[in-house]
Amino acid sequence: MNIVEHMSGNLDQRLSEIDMLSGAERKQGTYYPASPAQKSIFMADKLSGRGTAYNVPVIRRIKGMLDAGRLGEALKKLVNRHESLRTTFELDADSGMLRQKVHPAVSFAFPVYELSETETVLLIQDFVRPFRLDKPPLFRTALIRLTDREETVLIIDMHHIITDGMSVSILLRDLAALYENKELEVLKLQYKDYAIRQSQLAGTEQWNRQEEYWLGVFHEPVPALPWAGRRTEHRAGEDPSRTAYFAMDEQTSCALHRLAQTTESTLFMVLMAAFTALLSKLSDCEDIIVGMPTSGRHHEGLDNIVGMLVNTLAVRFFACRKLSFQEYLHQVKEKLIEAYENQDYPLDSLVEKLNGSHYLQGRPLFNVMFQFAEMEAAEQIDAIDMVPFGHDSVPGKFDLHFIVVQENSSLGLEITYFESLFSEETIGELISGFIEIIQVITSNLETGLGDLLKRQSVLPST
Image (cartoon, rainbow, N blue to C red; front, side, top):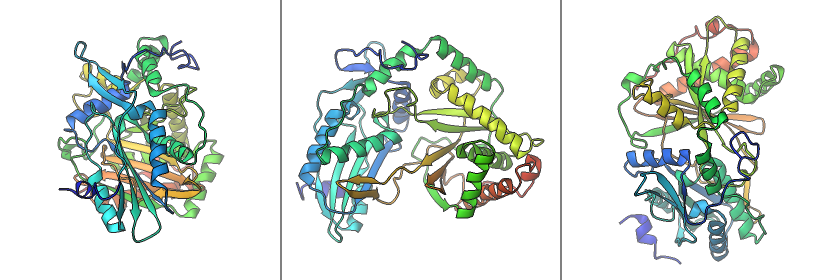
């Protein structure tokens, strides 16, 4: 019997249109098409054997005591407000196509526990469990009153098929407002409207144009990274992963901000150029492919929708050794702008096309993800701060997932990696190599990539 069971009784027009969703038909009934992102996660979840690789645990330490009754009522209103929290998934018996079912109501438990901090850690470990995608709800929640301090811990565990990073922020914001009895603006759109429109896009002029762009980017074979030969076949979430954290010093962060300003670039562009230069050095290859997530909310009306809207772009760079870093940064800027201009084409459609032509030969299109995240204003509920309880931990899905986190002018790094491919020492060397490149380019933008990457290479090892 796990700790959750033991304690459960303790206490009570088309893509080219700017407003692409305004005309989406609202079908009567409960079944709707699944979006490309949902189809991808559904298949990945099945392949992973219904594990927890696609769980999104959100755990917040609240610096005070909340009224459990009020919070329970706020959660009910939250579920009524966002259809994604009442959605399940099943394959259509006739067509075999995945469809989502929006339930008019769902019942869910909201247990309240009184535990010490140590007991809370144990409960959290047991709380994150697999979901059945055809059984509502695809979230679970609980409240913990800490017995050794005047604090509360809120746990919300969701499946990735109904949420993404921005959706988490929306849910916490709305939950706080509902707890405070504030009136929220009625949502004009729900995730199903987005999914319906997505299902109508294939074959449109702009869809075909974006497809042509991405197929052009990958008309040449994709190079393998140096550790690919040591990668074993594994399902998402099976291989142990770890996350390393590093805070950049103020001087380095300020130098990066200045470099972005002087080159009329964004900070993300400069960091992407430095990171792909590092990958080029690591792999001794000029042809570099990196995945980067986009919010998928660039069309009007999607800002407050909860659901899986994220798309991942596979961006290809050529770190030619004859270029200066300034010239390479200009190339990176152009490639990123082009990628954003074609971001509505789903990655899974691209992979399907490339696999159909035997282009990938079963290999992934990329194994490294690069992400830039800006810390938002502090989360609060009833004027009480909500802060992460440790780190929101999810299993690794890429060989390397490199995140740069900006909080005001400060920068930090979060690197998630498979332990079967990299040792802790190697990741430390990789971070040192990244910082070294930044220090060189902020001192001399005209440094040649050949000179920059001649320095001692960081080689992955176990």
